Image (cartoon, rainbow, N blue to C red; front, side, top):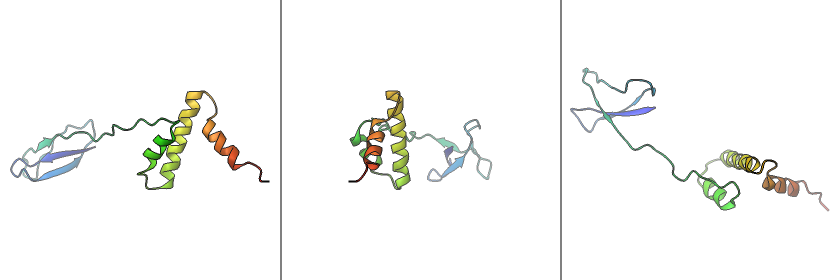
Length: 105
């Protein structure tokens, strides 16, 4: 985890220090002076609930993705949620598969 510490003599100087969660969260400068820990609001996403049956939710969630792989991962995750909720096959995946493999006339 990254923790922030502020120099008590120069309040504009802030360092990012990597520490384990179980470490004592203290930092001492080169002169041995203890720096003050800076508390911040955790970075959390409040919009993490995605309805696995909603095309709109999928499009909204995948809009900011940078790679096709990320979209495929989201698609797989949503498919697994549908299978789990329905206790069997994912109907959306099944429909797409049937349309893809439909014999051409």
